[in-house]
Every structure is written in C-alpha cells, then in structure tokens.
Amino acid sequence: MWVGWSNLIPVDPRTAPRRLRSLPTWLLSQCATQGHRLVGERLISADVAHRYHFSLLAALDESGPTSQADLGRRIGLDRSDVTAAITDLEHGGYLERTPDPHDRRRNLVNLTATGRRHLDTLDTLVRTAQAELLAPLSGEEQRQLIRLLRIVVDHHVDQP
Image (cartoon, rainbow, N blue to C red; front, side):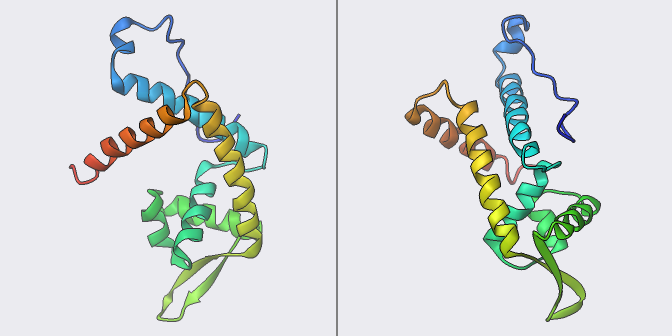
C-alpha cells in the first residue's frame, strides 16, 4: 500500500447514490482518488514512498537552488514534512543542501545529476498513470478537461 493514501477508497459509481453522482465535487473526488491510486502504484514501483518526493524534485528542477521553506510553500507541504522528505532524498543522492551564500542561516536545496535522472524516470511513471486515468477520453477531450480544471483551480487561487 502506498504511504499517505491508505484512507482513500474509491466508490463504485453504479452503487453510489444518484445525488452524489451528479455533484461535481463528488466526481472530482472520485477521479482524484483513482488518480492518486494510479500514481501511487507507479511511484511505489520506483521505491518512492511519498508522492511529494516527486513534487519536490519537480519543483527543484524548475526553480533551481531553493530554500527549504520556499520549496515547501511552492508545493504546499508542511515544514516538518519538507525537512523529512529532503533528508530522505538527500540520503538517496537525489539532492544536496548547501549554505545560502547570501544568508548563511539557511540552506539551499539543489537537485543533483542523480536526482535529475531519477526525476526523468518518475516523470515517465507519472505520465503513464495520467494516460491510464484519462484513457476513456479522446486526446481532445483530455486537453479540454485539463483546460477546464485549470480554469476552476485558477479561479479559486485568491479566494479565502
């Protein structure tokens, strides 16, 4: 079982109450549950115990050296979880911590060459899970779904 998602249980939509099956929030939740399951299965095959390891590596690849605090804020991960994940990834040789040359009180986290190769592997696994999740949709329907979801997510970014 994949760590962190054991409490998510997909519901058979054929037996769920009609009221639920007509709610976008319920449908999104069920879709997310299936997506988390698929991604989790792929990542566990690469000995990745937490989905946020992928998120951390992806954020570092985009941003370059970053403070732990900024990294946690960027992917929405609690400070204590960031520290533990960085320690795990550092032990695996996927990233390194170095003193910030502008502020010696903090460390910068940087992706290593090994981390970049590992991220490439994880990217492939995550893309495979995405393709499996969206398999019932045509390519155009997949692009439309992603576009519509981005609109909804972006709309709520600045909401309280």
